[in-house]
Length: 67
Image: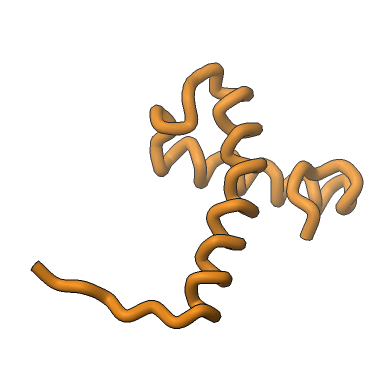
């Protein structure tokens, strides 16, 4: 068995990454009418592409992600 040494800055970064990912994942799951755990990589990528196209066509206000 192996272990990874994690410093506080990485732990904070990773926690923020997970929390920030939860909101769009919930939206993806809602639109796909399934649980987050059931989303496929293809569904996640397709949703991100769709959101990017909306941002390009309508601006930041039309898209879900706040970039």
